[in-house]
Image 1: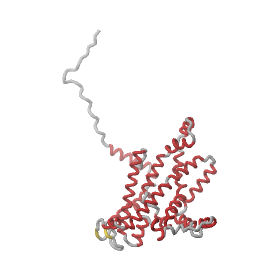
Image 2: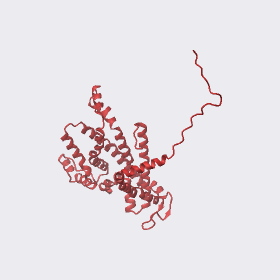
Image 3: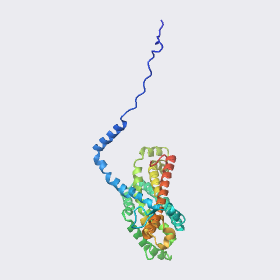
Image 4: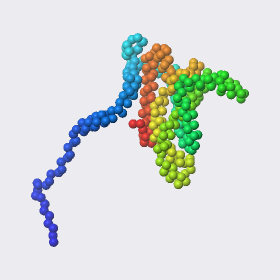
Length: 330
């Protein structure tokens, strides 16, 4: 028994399937979906109006003023300067020895702040996570959070009162037979005072995000680690730290982005002419040059230079984080 097959005569084969026509109206559909979502959740979208206005008025519109870094500006004259001078003010601060001194001070204070103030909240969060008594944990959290709610003026006042010549610290040193130390007047002590006060004010508040990230780690991972014979330190190293790594990298990128923007208010309140060699930073130098000396164009050029460095730092940190650990802001 044979099976016969018939073939279609030449020229009568079925034509190949036509390609699907490109979908039209995709943008219109997306626009319609966006309008529908806006009508449905307009109350939520309305909450973003004030923050957007804030950033527009106080963050983006002032960027127009950067043009005076390349124009000669005189108080009472045109808002955008009198005449174009090009890179004159850039050359001025690049050739100014005082600028390079404050630039080095900024790098020193910013580096020390990043070195100590970034890991301490992580360590404190890990320690609080190990506390089993809820009353003790809440007490430590409350005590460590409290300095964050104090204004910079109060923090600076407490620091100066504690370290004054007749303050409690020097009084304790006198009881130990040590001569009083002029902490506020000695340039070599300023960086220690600034970083120490910054740790005291921000360490507790910085643990909030890490404690929240710790709650998202699956408990089964700890159980599996214990079954494999891991001790508590090994569980922290191989389970806890990888679990909060995205949060750590995000905050590290943000801290690197503000590396050059050393706290202007605290430095301004704590420093004095005697501590300028180690305390004067770019932000305070810009303030004195622009507000006190009326050199607004010169100050704008320095501020623009600082902003460009910050942009380069945060972009580089983001790219490095994406390539090494796979976590980035954008």
